[in-house]
Length: 253
Image (cartoon, rainbow, N blue to C red; front, side):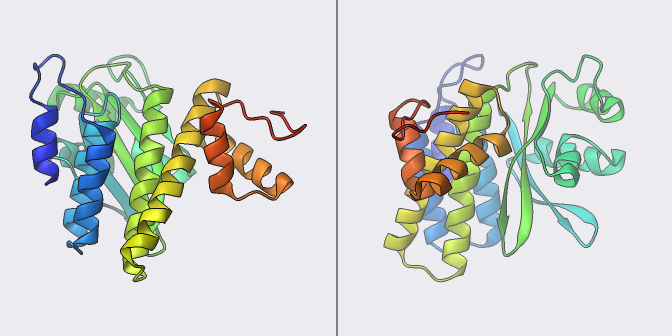
């Protein structure tokens, strides 16, 4: 099902492929999860979804640390898998460092001087990619997972990309964990909706205030705690007010 969505999105010209409708992508992804597909198939579908809904992402993978090793549990294609192999060989890179430092890492132009020269040199020489991003994190069965995006063009990852990646990560996390815990479909759909709204609100705050993912989430959580409002309701208010909510006298500090 996800392959058919990808084919439709790529039906445009090679230079400007048509953008996939996020709602269609999420629906297809949810159907794969609801069907109880094997975890490897679900992870691969999440990676394909990233290439469809995250601006600038041409290749995507999911990396997890297990017993001190970095393991690719899903990839959109062989190029994404190969780049993960390069990071493991180099011992560092945006995704490995994102896991170690627990914060997103990005290099929008690998052809320019950067903090990962060994990895950058190999990626530019051996793959079509010129940008790399260890982005939104989530967890399943208690294991943290870091999503990674690679771009064929430099300088395409931005705050919009960050917001889109957060939405996808939130969607995938709540869906997989809900299915694993045996929640019914109606409960799962409510969870997916609220988490998608939280992801959108975080991305919007990142873009408007120039803060990172953690700081944006802290803003939402502060509103929620100070005003005793559910986090999902705070997120919905942020979205409806286009990132500038007014909760009585409370305002952005």
